[in-house]
Structures are given as C-alpha cells and as structure tokens.
Image 1: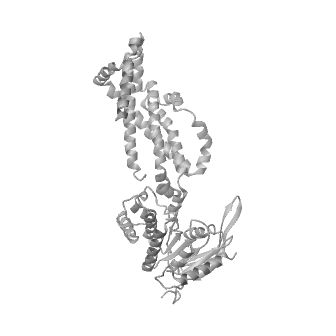
Image 2: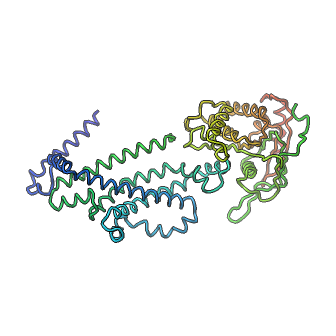
Image 3: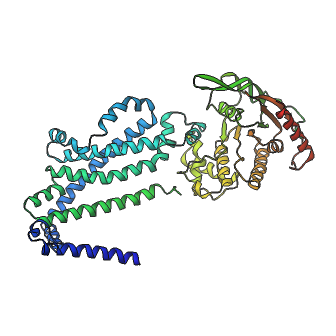
Length: 247
Length: 253
C-alpha cells in the first residue's frame, strides 16, 4: 500500500515539475511540451488516422524483422552449438561481424532495399540476430550431457534425433531469454530505421520535430514505451505457458 | 526352486575377454580387463565393485553407448535382446510430463500415439504410480522419480534390464521398498536383470549371482551364487556370511 502510494506520488511530482518548467525557463515552451498538451495532441493524431497508420507500419516492420532475425539467429546458434566443426569454421566470421552494430548496416540497407519496409526489416533482423545467436549457442552448449545420453540409450543416436528430443527442448529457456532481450533491441532498430525515412513512428517523429511539434514527438515516444510494455507482457505470458515445466 | 536346473538354452549374453578403457591425453587408460561373463535368460546378476572399476562402463558397452577396447560380446541369435538402461539419477527429461517421459523409448517404435500412451500408463501402473502421468518430474519425490525411470525402461519391454546403481541416491526405507518391488517385478516378468551396485548387502539380497570386480584395472575377483531361498530376509545370517565372503575377496589386493 505504502509502496503504491509512493509510486503514484513520485509520478505526480515528476509530471507537476515538468508542467512548471516553462514558467521558470523562458523560451522552453517551444522546445519542450508540457504534460497537459499531450492528451490533445494524441487525440488529434488519433482522429486524423496518422497514429494508427504509424503504429501499424512500425509494428509490421518490427514483427517481420524480429521473426526473420530470431529464426535465423536461433537456427545458426543451435547449429553452431550442436556441431563444433561448424563453430570452428565460423569463428572468425563471427568475431568480425558480431561487434558491428545493427545500425551500421543502414547504408547497405538503403542501397539494397531502398527506403522501404524491407530496409527496416533488414536492420531489425541484423540487430537481433547476434543476440539470439549467442543465447541459442550458449544454451545448446550447456545442455546436460547426461540427458543426451538418456536419449542415446533409448535409441536416439543421430544428431538430429538428439537435437529434437533433448538439446532443443532443454535449451528453450535460454533461447527465450535471448528472444526477450531482442524484443527491446528490435524497438531501437525500428526507430532508427524509420528516422532514416521508412514510414512509421520514427518517421512521424522526425517530421513533427522539424515542425517543432514537440508534443507530437512526445506522444510517439510514449506510444513506443506503451507498445514495448505490451509486447513484453505478452511475451512473458507466452513464455510462462511454454515453460510450465520449470519449477 | 532356484538354481535346481541349469538353463537349457544357450546364454542370452556371452562376454569373453572383454577389456574396457578410454583415451586420456593420447594414452590408453585400462579400466577393466579380461572380463568373462555368461548371462542366462531370466537371471538376476549383481555386479559389485568400488567406483571407477568399470561397472557403469560395462553397462554402456552392452547397450551400445561405448565400445569395448577388446573382447567379444555375443547375443543369443534367437532373440533381438532388447535392452533398457536405468541410470543412477533418474535422468527424467524435466520438460516432459511423467507420461511423456515414460513414452520416450516408444517414440523410436512404430506404435501409434494412442498405443504409446496406453503402454506408458500400463508401465506407470506397474511401478505403482498410476495417476501420476500428468505431473512434471520436479513435482515428484526422489523415489517416485526413480520409479518413473524404471517405468520408462520397462515400457520398451526389454529382454534385459540394465540398472546402474539405481537406488544408491535414495534414503534407506525408500531404497528397500524399491528393492522389494524390483524383486516382485522380476518374479512376475522373468526379465534378465544386470544390476550394478557398490553396496554388498544390496547385491546379495537381490541377486542370484554376484560378480565382484576389483583392482586396477578391474578384474573379476569373485563370482558367487547366492543360494538362499526367496523371499529372503535382509538379516538372514546366511546372507550375512555370503556378504562377508564377497567382501573379503574384494579386499584381497
């Protein structure tokens, strides 16, 4: 109870202080919207349909890019984790490509795909690929060898059978940790790609800020926070369903 | 009744001059040498020895998880000699419910999903865990987990049950109950059982024959028939005598 009170009080103080900033710093009005402006700005964006279109476009890049990046990352991570020769063969490629931030691929994304949805998908996919790759790789490598031996003792002797019966299900919790991290990473990539002109939340923010419509910028910032929160919640729910076996 | 007539059929498994070892830093480390063992159908054999003597390795070789470094393994050609292994720690797959754990080995067969389910339920009933099929392994006690592991092995209807210190991690009352249940199962099904243990009392209480391994590299120190009528009493002085005899043979280094 005291905890809830404190958290509400903290938020109220923060909003109140924010509302008062322009009173003390002349000129801030143009550069920083106050909280009381936001509901109106949000309502206008909703009414003219821009908000829904932007959210739809961003979510579509986000989900498509995430799906591609996670699928490829899990597949590559599992393959390298389960087959050491494959890991040795790709060691240097991994070492070179891994430190390159996903956003550094923006020039190529635009060259290859144009300022299109596909470019955003590509940047998102590259961004999450390595996160998921390393979590899958580590999880597969750490699977209890005794359990793999159980599968072998019951006749599952090929690497594919061992993978399906033991290694993959055993490493699912570890893989999902990586997927959850990549949910947040992918949001950053969405905004970055859209700031470069791909239609969506980021693009709308860029337009609004060039018109000094800072209230609209903040509306979209809060939209991102809300969408990310919802996605993360949905993920946690799905994860708890998948991992009911965890004590 | 036991031990009156020798088995008329050829041995189910015949092991000759078997040697086991592993490679370590490029050198060969011998674990077990010159092992001869003939196992008749329906026999209950306990393999006794200290840890590191190659008992577990022997079971792994029999089921094909490891290769011997020398020697011959012969299986009775009239039987497909299916085997199933029960490990020391139950080693259930934590993400599978009990029933799916028991059905693991059946997924390698051509049985339909429904047939596999029926067999798993049947195997669970056989180990006294009817109604536990929907639980997860972490919701079971240690003894129950080991029963599930036994059911998983029995579900594939093996000719030979290989057991690798299956009860050593359990507390005494649970261990004794599982020992007695295993004896009942053996009597009812007539399975051939190869039971590895480091516990002399357990070996002489359960088995018809105790093979004692000792030394480094290991070799057969004693092969003792336990001619004590069943049901046996744990405190039977005759069993105690046999246990001391086996112990003295193991000690004679």
